[in-house]
Amino acid sequence: MKSDHLSNLICYCFEYTRQDIEDDVKKNGRSLIMEKIQAEKKFGNCRCPEKNPNGR
Image (cartoon, rainbow, N blue to C red; front, side, top):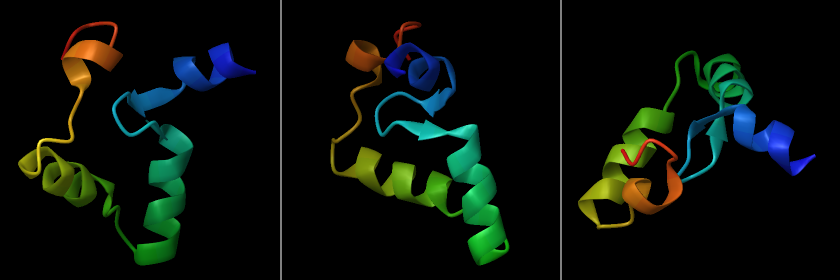
């Protein structure tokens, strides 16, 4: 269900959920997701003001 997915989002821009972060830790020994988000932000690919209900 889409609304369930949205309620579980940690990152609205790239649609990462808590489960994504947990899976990333299991796979890599730590989460690499924040590094991926930071790299995308450097390239101007962050759309938090449009996608995040809190505008950040």
